[in-house]
Length: 619
Image (cartoon, rainbow, N blue to C red; front, top):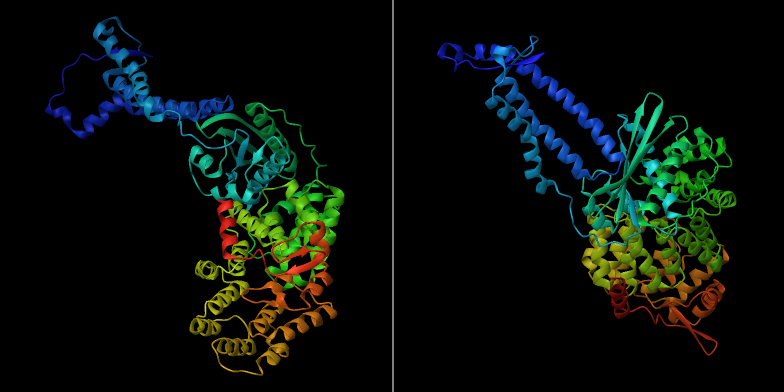
């Protein structure tokens, strides 16, 4: 095949018909040249981009390659139009003249000049990212299998990498709840790095070919948007653990090399049974989305996972958390709630390095008023994983129940910082505002949360308390009508609001304490009776509850706008609850203090001024 020079004159009018034009394009094989160039160019780009990525070239180099190929297309079409292409080769009478060679050379140089002039527009970003050199965020992996039901695999490999990196002291790893906010976002690396405070991000994907899964990952330096490492591994779909484990180890080693620190490899756990691991990934995927999907199938999958593989530590840990949180999303969970403690102990026995089960054990220790043990469990959970939003939230609840509100607020705010979508700690923060006497802030926080769609019973109650302490009795009365409580409870709440507004109701305290059909929570009962000024009745109710071995949340004792701590029996009560021993050994909080061997309870640390100091310190 050769090139035949074109030396005929411009076509006359008769040859300007569209049909003739198409025929000439076919004669000179312009269309064929276009199709071949696109096919070959696209294949070349796919292969070259994969090779460049593997060798760590910046994304901008790959962009330049694509621009060069695009600019080459008009050059190829021009050559195809200017020369006839057939199988006769180059004949002496059609040998190209000097002018023709100049045209060919100019056409060939066009992509080069295009790349040179386009280079400034695709240069590597130089955005400064304010992050420590050892900070990294693992983004959700893309599910490119074409099967939406395999989303749990993409999440699973990302979670496995996060768990692996979190266990390395040399790295500062963003919490999963933070980085997973970018599931559907297509933000540039430097933007993600700035928002998460990460010098590096890990991106990846999961692909499927038959029964094989291909896990790919890249480490990107966020300041320049440069890919510094990439690799992939394959695993059979029936045993994905090995592929995930290999890839997470490779990412850890790549980061250690890039950052310039020596990382001691975390010893991988024994590979779980493949069926158990698949059930674990599916159940865990559901648990992470609790509140938006039915949690029951996830609990069942996790229970089945440890039945298949009784030595699967992560399976027991996940099951413990699922059992513990199940009652918050379904009444069916009440039957399995206490099984969470057994599952947590089993997880710790199998792998004491797992942080999650310690937080579960802390919750159960607190329900038995074993305050010192509870504190130790929570502290250990956060020592092992300080980026776990749930652990911060549960520890914050423990601190509030122990009267250490200043510390509680910090952990609640940290939980929300780690997971801005986490609604329960937002409600506790709002209750904290009210407890510190910042009524306007607390009421506004509850109203905003309710308007934002978080309409739980406790959130409703927070709004109700806010209206009452702000003396907005008309709104509080109207709010009762929207209550999720039963009619008996609504009637008592309506009478309570009227009494707060100044109406006399001598029977109200007795009716509140002797209305089991109202099914009012003990915390709201203690608060309402105390707000009505009958502290003797409130204290008697508390002791009666303890004698009957019912659960008591100490936060009700220093509730919003009440002074139950002034009661003569209050110091004896907190000592009976085990709080005084806890305060002496661990830390005194904001409710009580010790002076000359005497316990003084005066809410000394709960003031709006103290709250402002806390917020300023956190900021």
